Image (cartoon, rainbow, N blue to C red):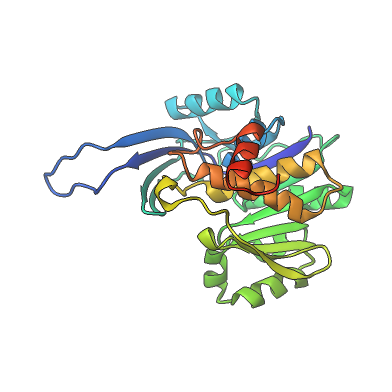
Length: 297
């Protein structure tokens, strides 16, 4: 095992359409995509596309969507460690002019306990806060073993405050700031107070505001992807997380600015494609995009 991801799995159905019908109306979509979904899950698949073989603890049901998900993981060589639920979870996503509406149907009634894995060889843990018991257990274990711990703080979970005490790299969303009623500056100070060595807030097209190893705060602007090229922003943050984990695994001695610059390019690639799977970049894709936008690789 080189990296462990823990989160909730979805099957994402992304539909590109000019509008949703109502009443007795009918409409034909312009395009659609069906793929794996979930924050840490998509991050794991992104890490796999970039040449690694991550392990993933996630939910799975014995139904046809669950079997579809297992097949997807096998194709990407993601090692699954499943936690049984009765029904697979679904996300319906409608991208629209740089934003996206999402309707979710989720089963979080776990039928089994989370698996306890041998962490030998593991160098990074990435969490999205789902499966709170498993997240806290592995965050503690990895912190005790000196394994890098990373959190995608997309929103407040039941044990977010306690979990952050075991996190090295905390990259949170603006939504978490809103839920906790903290300004950007206050959130960064909060992350520092929890002992997070690296902390930041993703702000969509404005990029990332973060503090580095020395505690210095700076902004990493988003890459200038032409507006007409932006197709689907859903999953961009998840790809960002998976890419910086992959970059860390490749170059653990590098500064975090380098990891985030690599991840920024991966995220810029994602938003130009519909659905999570098509939007996962290879290393060659990232290099090509960086060169095209005149960004130093």
